[in-house]
Structure formats: C-alpha cells, structure tokens
Image (cartoon, rainbow, N blue to C red):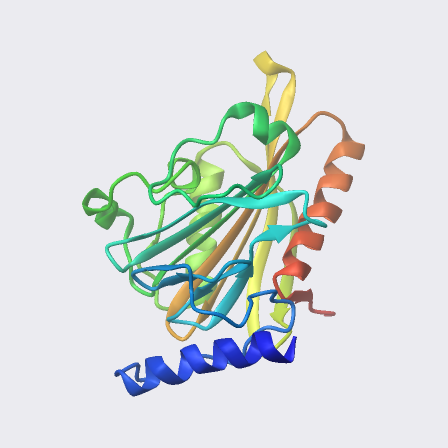
Length: 248
C-alpha cells in the first residue's frame, strides 16, 4: 500500500510542477493502484491498472467494488470537463470504454454504480456540447450551476421530485481523509407499476477542490425489505469510496 500511495504522490507532484495550482488531497488508503506507469490517460482521468485518479481532485476510484463483484466497465472524460465511471456486475474486462454506452436494464436488476465529476458552475444546458454522458444524466440532469454544494444537491433533489421520485431517506457523509468535507446523500424511489418494480437511487454529492463529485447507486427493488437491503448495500459502496456517515 505504501508503494501505491507513492505512485500517486509522484503523479500529484508532476501535476503541480506542470501548472496545477491546487495540490490534490492525500491519496486514499483504499486504493489498489499499482506503482507503475499509467496504462492510459484521458484528459483529467488516469487509469493505472487497478484504479482511476481524477487529477483535479486527487480522488482515487478502485477498479472493483463490493468484494470484486462490480467492476468499472466504462470510463471517460468529456472535453476535460465531465469525468464518468460506471461500475456494473461482473469480472473486470480487459478494456475500458472511451465513450459511454447505455447500461442494459438487466444489469440494473443487480445494481449499478455511476461516478460523475464536473467543475463547480457547470450547467445542465452545457450538456449540449458534450456527447452522451451515460444513463444517469437522462434521469438527474448533469450540473445545476450552483457554487454551493448543498444548493447543488437540493437542485438534484428538485429534479428527482419533478421526475416523480419520492424521498425515502437522507444522510450526511464525511470524506474519511478530510472530515470537514461534507457530502449530502439521499435515497429516492419511483414506482414502475407496469413492470411491478421500483427504481431505487442513492444520490450523493459533494465538492472537492472546486469539482463536484456525484455518486449514484441504482437498483430495481420490489419490497420494503429490498429497499432496506439496497440502502445498506449502497452506503457500503460509499464507504468503499472513502465516505462515512456523520453522526448528528
């Protein structure tokens, strides 16, 4: 693990020397990124074998989640503005897609995890200059132009409400590496009567170095017990990404 952190610190140092004004926060201890040359870099996104680094924030996203049962099947950076990573069930694939493609409905039955990051002030209307950014923006929009992270969070809540999603639960989470950095999170549900199931989302958003990071965990559920299990699973995924519940 010490070598993994060293590799990412070297990346951070190179970014600072080449003009990055704000050094990223310390590397996350849950990373499995190996000490070797990155396999590829797309804009602000570095893929280094077993994980990803958003160079604007220093945030590290693992290649797999949930004990290896979910893997990052897609990753991209659109116009050096919007980074996306999608985790779906299955073993890690040999390649990372450079362009987002729709996630099959069958995978939502088992659950999906989507990470989207974009600069503060980014607006939904700017999506017209960015080719398709995956499934989630079609449900949530992408960016509401707010400078304050809590206001940005509530703008998403309003979009979900307008799209007939009902609030089930809310939570406040803290970055384990910087406890003062707070993320807002909610669990919402939308009944799909014709399909005899409910679309469940846990949407979590916060700001790091002027960049919004949004994580959306999604799954189809059918009973109240399913909802409870989904909530526990979704917040377990967030813990794997370094976010922990704030005790009020």
